[in-house]
Length: 223
Ligand SMILES: N[C@@H](CCC(=O)N[C@@H](CS)C(=O)NCC(=O)O)C(=O)O
Image 1 (tube, rainbow, N blue to C red):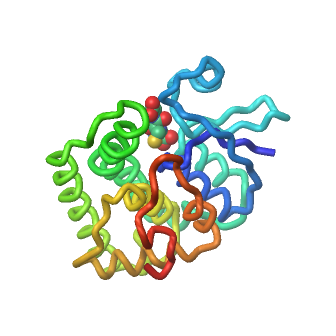
Image 2: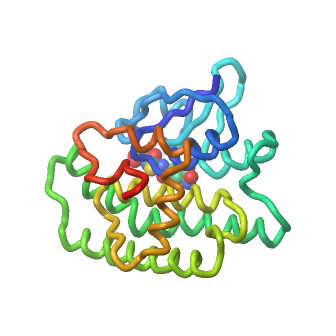
Image 3: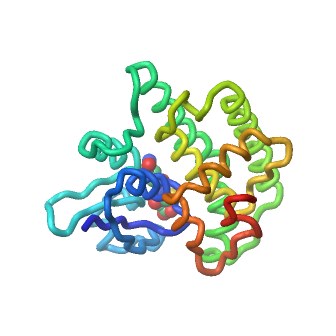
């Protein structure tokens, strides 16, 4: 069976978990804290990052969430997530990259550093000024999702796609770390509630990162 090396609050691993579940691909989780830099993990991925997906029964190791999602898009027919015309597929990939790169860089990564790494590893308090700026940037991203959902059924158009899962994966981690305030974002909040209620989302929402409690409502699809 496929083994996904990841930790509970890795947004890229969450994106892969959602895509694999939607496609009905079986996998098990192998816990990996990339910041511990174990030799065994570096041997798997010299970049030292999660997610890494491998099947111990095959000489195949897949690295990078987008490479992994594209691999299964090409090899599994069920539940296509990068679909439509070439222009529609380009729009899906644009949005995936927006959330993987910009949302992660401006929101998820600072939250992981301030509220997870500082607490669990560095043992220093979070920088409140930086957290305020992160919340401001999160509001800008939620404004954009509001606009997309005002104009489209799903983020990239008429169909549920990898763009929705990439965005929801980042938001779920930011939400766990207390970085999401839905006030003034009814459209984005409604879309996220629908994403949260999918069976593929359930295992993510019940999983906890040790030492970091999730806020009230985090795992409730109606909240
Ligand atoms: N582009 C990569 C990004 C992967 C990435 O940045 N992973 C982070 C965890 S969220 C990581 O392993 N960072 C190393 C560390 O925290 O030491 C992907 O999509 O898989």
